[in-house]
Length: 321
Image 1 (cartoon, one colour):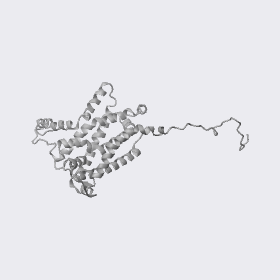
Image 2 (spheres, one colour):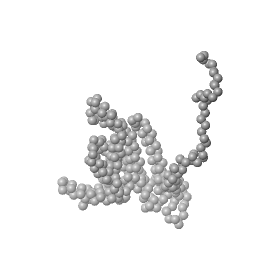
Image 3 (spheres, rainbow, N blue to C red):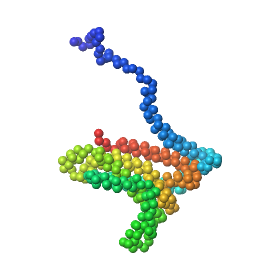
Image 4 (cartoon, rainbow, N blue to C red):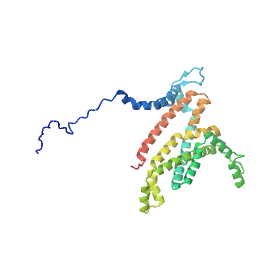
């Protein structure tokens, strides 16, 4: 057959280029059916997330004391200007940064180490250790704070009594009234509560690592530390970045209940953070405008932090494809 010669198509012959599939028209309701399944969730999110967010944005431009019969006074951007000039806000920001940095080792490094060291535990011992380490996470923060207040009490606490018997202390340690120790105590208690959750997250990530990589490394003569450094840690990088982002965004929320029960932000605002300050403005001082303005500022700030962290995760994380 010569090139460039077009042969006529015989009658009844159908080729791939001439075949047309005629599909029946879909009814209109099939196009919106997937969205109907999502509608309950969307309505719930709108009511419980975006509606309060819009109300908070509205209240940030008013001066109001939460009393229904009291009029709301429009102040514009005055609340935002006043929030940035408050000295307690600056102290709360510094403390929030301290909480983030202080909790990171207890929510990322230590749980990851525990998960790697206990990865070979099998059977009932594995279930027992997971149950024991996860128990603090399912306990109410108020209960945990009450228990630790008794343990660290300056006169009747187990820690002070033990240290006094061993070292004959001249003065009892005041964990929650000493400005230097109070914030460290809150960090330790929060980390103790969250460590079980983080360990389970890392254990689940370890379980998803293909064991063939470790077997191949062992055949090539790699030791345990080399396997951890060159195989396990790179494959755990998405989980490490995820837990780091979670700690940065939620450190203030995790510490709020412990601060409220144990120190009330003291002594002299040594343990207050942005969440406790927002609650104090809104429900102690009844300065709803200040609280709403600060909440919107932190909403935007944490949103930007989350966006940057996600971008870094996409660049730095190593995924096993």
